Every structure is written in C-alpha cells, then in structure tokens.
Image (cartoon, rainbow, N blue to C red):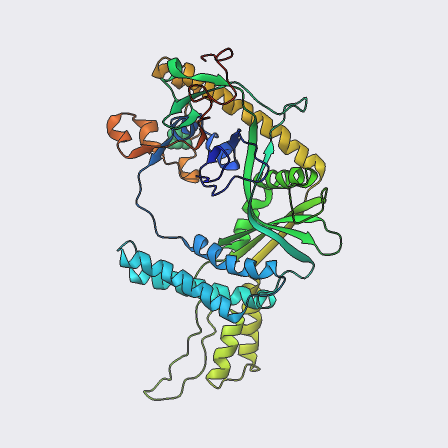
Length: 438
Ligand code: SF4
C-alpha cells in the first residue's frame, strides 16, 4: 500500500503514482486482464479474495530486475556500472537467496542453480552491451516510475461513474455483494495507473521512449508473443499525458513520446564446453566437443580452447565458433523497437474508457445483486476459461464456492481511501444533503 499523504492507497504502489489526485478510483493493466473473466474480477477485485500463501522465493525474473537496478542507477549518471557495483549486485542477489535457504523455503541446489544462471547471463549481457554502458543515442531519464492519467469519456470529460463504497475501519473501500444497505454512492474520477521500467530520452531530439526489460529462456519466442501487447500503448499514453501536463520533472513539458522497446534477455542455463577424454588412461585430450546440443556462448568456447592449448583457427573449431555466434550468441538478447503515433494512443484511450465503463457496471451490479443467481448473470465465468494460460488463482471458488474453499483465501481491498476526519461518517465529497444508497 502507498504510505503517502495521498488518501488514495493502491496495492503494490509504495507511493502515489505521479499525476494521481487526492481521491480517485484507479485501474491498471492487470485490472483489465483480471476483468477478462467477469467471475474472476468479482472474486479478485470486488470481493477482494487473495490466496493465502507463504512468501515464495524470488524468481529468476525478479532477481534479474534487482540486479538491473544497479545498472540503472549508474545509467542515471550516464555511465556504465563499475565492476565493484556489479559484484555488489551479484552479492545482494546471492544473500537474498541464502535468506530463503536459511528459512528452508528453497534448497541449496536450487539457489546455486539460480545464481549460476544469473551469473552466466549477466556476463553475457555485459559483454553484449559494452560492459553495461548506457545506450549510445539515449539517456535514462527515470526508472520504476508510477504514472497516473484520467480516463476520459467520448466527450473528453474525466470519467466519474457512480460506484458504491463502504466504510471499513478507518478507510473507505469499494462495496462488496451483500453490502448494499450500508453503501454510499460516490462519483470519484477514474484514473489509469502503471509503472514504467525505464523512461529514455533521445540525446539530440529529446523524444521519449519507454523501455521494458524482460527475461525468457527463449527470447525470440517471447518477442513474437509481445508483438501485439496492448499494455505498450497504455504505457505510452501515460507518458504522453504526463509530458503534456508537465508532470515529468526530468524533461521539458510537451516532449514528444515516440515509442517502446522490449529488451528480452536470455534466462536459461548456459553451458561450459566439454573437454573430450583421450582413448587411453592418461592420454592427452583430443580436443573440445563440437556437439551442437548445448547452449555455449562463443566467447566461453574460445576461452576454453585457449586455456586447453587448442588452436581456435583449426577448421572444426572455426566452424563451431561461427555456429555458436549465429545460433547461441545471437539469441541471448533480443531487442525490438516499435514506434507509436497519437492515433494508436488515442485508440488505447478509447478502449480504456470502454473497459472502465464495464468495470464500473460490474461493481454496481455486484452490490445490487440479491442472490448468487443474480451474480451468475452479471459475473459469469468466461466462455473459454483461460485459467491455464493466465494462471487463475480462483479455480476453487469458481468451481465450487463455499466456506471450506474460501478458507484458503484472505480478504483484502485492492484500493482504499482514508476517512476524512472532518466528515468521518460519509465518504469524502459527500454531504448530509447529497448522500445516497446504491
Ligand atoms: S477458473 Fe476460469 S472461469 Fe473460473 S474465475 Fe478463473 S478464469 Fe474465470
């Protein structure tokens, strides 16, 4: 939650996103994904059910993200990270994993395996990116920044639909089914929020680009899947709004937003070359294996050749090095640039409004429902359940709801608003003359 002076508190935001007013209903790209299935939206966002889980060990992706933060801190000073900083980043990742091993939440072998992958891929990344130097034509303006923009109706007004809220201790939250009699209708503005990985500015033209780092065992395949990612124009629309409104302190107001690039780094295991054994005991090795069944970066292979006294110029090694360069090195990182125009972003904004209107209706319907049958009509299961694809956490209550199934869940609101001490009995902005039940 956001421990800031902003009375709007949003889960997973340590501080209020830039551009968020004091009181707003927020939705994010994840909210829209959850709403893909109305039943899932009901369980997750309206009822606030969360699976009870022990804290899971970090994934490769989250470790990579943390290591890259050290790189981004250096980029902000327009320099490559020092060797010492990278050693510190690796040490930090290792300590994090050891913490989980100490608590028996991860085996030592798993932690070692993760670190091995991380080290190998980090070495590859640094090698491919001039020692981790900042991009030549761009400067990093900011990283990990939360932004907010108003959702607008077709006529351009800020969308502020009627939604029911209830008081819950010292906060207000969106009402749940069965709370109609104690809910109040509010018309607070709706905002779209998102967190950017990196905001880059072209060094000479000043145009802005958003960059997103991802990791995958198969960067090429992931890039194909991301070729039509609606999240991208969403990010860019956020930046366009912030730039037009002069909310980005690092760039001139009105700086043009140009596009997006995905940078996908290999996350799988990299192998070391195999030194072949001589036929007889103590016979010298006949050389390095040239088998093509493992992912060995060409520079590891060349280094091993030199270390073991073999000639990298020999035909079979020259061919194998060429093969590794084109089939392994070339697939360790994939970068894709996509430029977007105002038309693309305007289209996203229209879709955002349509999505928000659907969500607002789902909140109203859920509170007005008198029976579970009503909820079946207003919040049906999705026609083609995508739970395996999206990893739906709600298969239990979706299939067979009841107290027993719900025992595995806790209830938590995704967003709350602080009670106004001057008007504690009513939601902020509502007076004794204007309050209304849904
Ligand atoms: S299991 Fe499928 S139908 Fe049920 S809530 Fe999840 S996505 Fe929707």
